Image 1: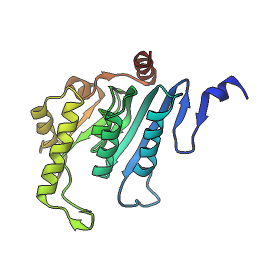
Image 2: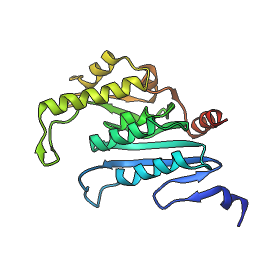
Image 3: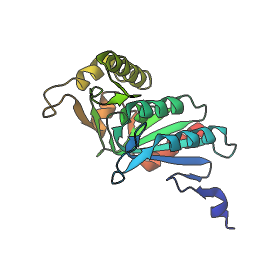
Length: 212
């Protein structure tokens, strides 16, 4: 077996470990309590959670690189993943590629440091008022409490001002027939939501510095 093969353990779930860094991608919609149509690209939270636990317990893995290109998805599943990553003792760096929309925003800020490429975008909006949870119609009370959980998590894991963030979420002048704001990479850093604009090499360099 070559040295490269010894240091690299490829997974069938879209993750890979190399030189002590485990790279995990969250792509497409985040699938939670309901199975999505097979034509949609989805990341299943029941697959992601055991991987994160294994990374935390592994003696060989020293850090986690989380790559994001997601349109959002199941709110509770996305927030559960973000909370799990944020509670890890091992260093975690996140990198937004393409998009980190909706419930992808907490995932983008759940690491010790966050990066975003200049061309990426993030959509900030309130929790939607449709759907069911555990077979019971969602109430405005549920949405209000869930919204507070999301905002509190984002603000406590980034440098964004809470009132400014809520204003962007409730903006009525930018999205047609909807509320919210779309920001690009530079804007995400300017408002304090993401730490730095950068790419893969920047994210890996920051993670290696934490690991050392």
